[in-house]
Image (cartoon, rainbow, N blue to C red; front, side, top):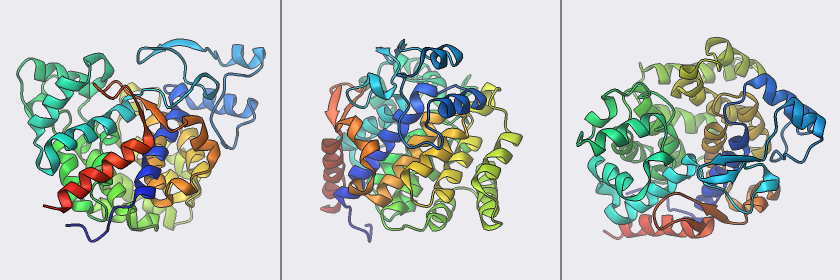
Length: 364
């Protein structure tokens, strides 16, 4: 049993922060850094102080190939802030909602098979990507977890599992080890090794953020939940070391980019460079939501994933009331998902349901 009680404002803040970060990065996911920085600068949003809009001059639209109409998760519009009425669907938030649904049904003792069954029952295959889609197809072909993760799966150390870990931290406040165990059961159906460790690390950070405000302590505690000799742990240790050496955020991001190439699909979506970017944003963001988003976004790579994870951690620390309104107001407390039965729901209701999952367990 956790020694830290769950707090609605923190959980709601985490849901809001995850959604806000995802929305920020979604329209420019896949952009290379030079294009991204050019657009931010010429549209007056550098340093980043809010969402990006397509309501810019024709010259800027042409120069940066800005479009409004494009199919995204079944929608027909690119999710610039001027095109939305709520938080639109994204895989980064689908999985958080799916984890809620799983734990409402199965509780803390769910198995990897339960995770796979929940996916097949509640989420269409074209709403999942890379490692998840391979695992989904493997499970359809009767290959059960954890075998479903490795068979013909070139994406098994991609970022996909890391973006699925947040909810397990939400329901384990102050218990990073327990959050990591839940995350392992989720991750092993589609990922191996560092792919799994990424989800365990993210879940553990969220659990620790429920009681701690010191970002170094949060990251250190999360690191204790993954193998210390793993490539992921060694990479995060390097970020912590740079921070202690007073290397600034811009230089830290430059070093990450020097080692990994965003123009290579493998590097762009691999868990290690993206986890390094998340930790850079959290360490150098000084608990400032806009600054943290700026660091995570401008490093490029997987922009919506990284801003979502960092936003979730920071939202848990700050609580909903302390996230600036420019980030929360455009969401209108509503989120769309591709999860069966949860097409359009309020973020506040998701926070309340998260509390109920935790309370139900505490009574046993």
